[in-house]
Image (tube, rainbow, N blue to C red; front, side, top):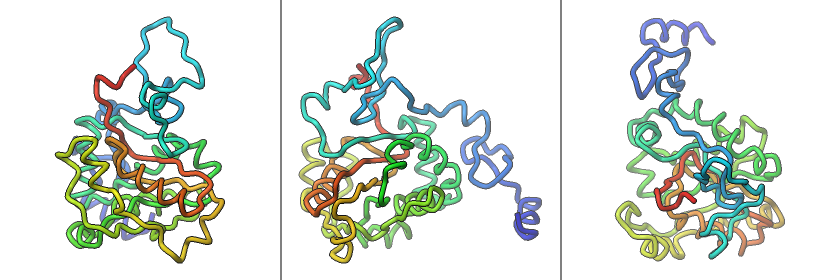
Length: 247
């Protein structure tokens, strides 16, 4: 740590974004906050990463799929998320996205590396889900791009920050139903022409902050596969899990 950084930490010690407690470094969370976060671990759907809620004594197949993936297999190869999207993780993510707490990406990188270790080991490129230019002007940065850049640098995989473009400004997905979400993002993305030859036959890991219904990442996946990518996997910081989704 530089002298300037040490001096700043002495005057304004780094604090946990959730509890306000003093922590060792910027972006870290306190032990209390850590205990409130729900990290996703096996058993889970081997395709979409949906955590299973099996009763004690049940045998879990290593290749188990959730009902949704059996009924309608997604276009992506695999999806993994670090956290369940709940009150604790929501506070962190909203602070990162809307309160300029960009130092939190320091904490996100090891969480994502652990959740996506298999897909990251085989990845040729990382690529963030893009924002439309008008939304970037309001937020000042694309949170998914920042995560992808930091993660790529950490694991030594190139990040194509401009690999995908959002060519159509769409209303926010927040209050839309599943079918409406898919319709909302239809034809909203395109692959950057300068990367068309680069991604052909390559394995892409698409990075986003939260997985909700999958409408956005499915549309991005379709565009990448149509443009010649060998496979597309999804890695997100958190995912929504409704009670009815636990099997």
